[in-house]
Length: 502
Image (cartoon, rainbow, N blue to C red; front, side, top):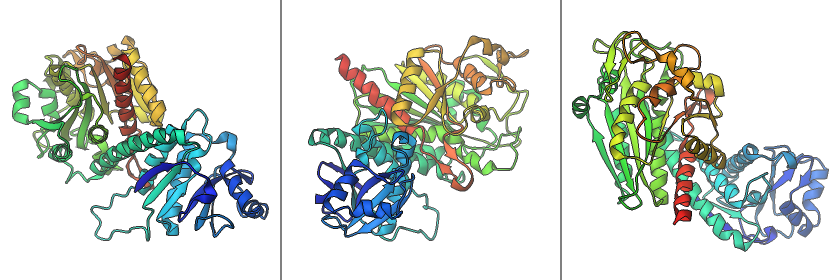
């Protein structure tokens, strides 16, 4: 779909359709009032007859409105004007896209970007509309023999902004929105692939496919033989029961001078997690293909970064692995010596993500990073604590945690900080090793982060638990594309900091 911005009067738009809002109860938005005035009360007469109340998500498609050049006018219910928030705004945009795809309007001018959303400016509204529109159109049908497509899908969408001086802001919002949307689509495509296709090697292949399109993006891999030489025994132990070899994939994006220390994004890439010897219940086990949501999020963020060509150095790391039970699988009771030299007693083989990540976090020390953020579908406890609405953020570095939360707020990709106090560390005490790989029933998300923190002493670090946000289950099963919006916004903000300091 093609996006653009313009500034003009609604009645003068020569378009297949123009889209305006109506508030509950039966109150025209400012732009809709303009149409009503030029059409001699055509819209207000319809509302008085009860054709549309204005409740959020209601739609009414009109043809040949008097004195309006557009072929159609689509009225979208926006709910109570004072209650129009970010969530409802994105839902309204999605409803608009789905409706336009059904009407046969192949191009439209959207005036919903002029609605007042509390605390949000034109940039935010246009960018969120682009992302919401692309998300509404996303389908994963690569493996279906019969693909259903809209009859005459929307091809072009123009966002109207209040004044010509905001055209530049709107164009930047579209650019950023398209970059994020491209990353989210890539994240979803990779995560939705079944585990017989999406193996650790497949993650590396996807990274190389992206890198082929950009001169400043290269990919390297660390194979099992090199892992053995490096002493990455915890990582290797997790994949030992699988016929698919573990692969650590690194995407090197160079957008700034070589001397600028890189930001490192690390993603847990368990392409399937059976739980190993501590096998999971069979119900919904198919969703454990999404246990590589951290890796797919990193791939998506790197795709967005390359699309936007941000002036920053970033290394995206995908810790690809598969956790399966067989005669070679690691066991509860095993003691592993990690790459850092610290030893771990395994009490549960289903707490495998932290074992893959701990060696990966040690490995990335060699890049002398400015900071490291890891993301992982790490704990069911995170879903209990925060549900499916917010990712958890844990860090002992307050400025970094604040930056991540700020990016979450700006992008609409919600996150919430949990404590990472030393008081929780004792839950990992082991009588036989330096630590054990689980900390008991209490504060499971926090103790998992405590475990990882022991391998991040040499750089600034934050952990994101995305177990509740990386995918949806049930009837709407599928990858959400998160945390690509948050990560991309974080990197955009970092570039702004660099620009302002120069």
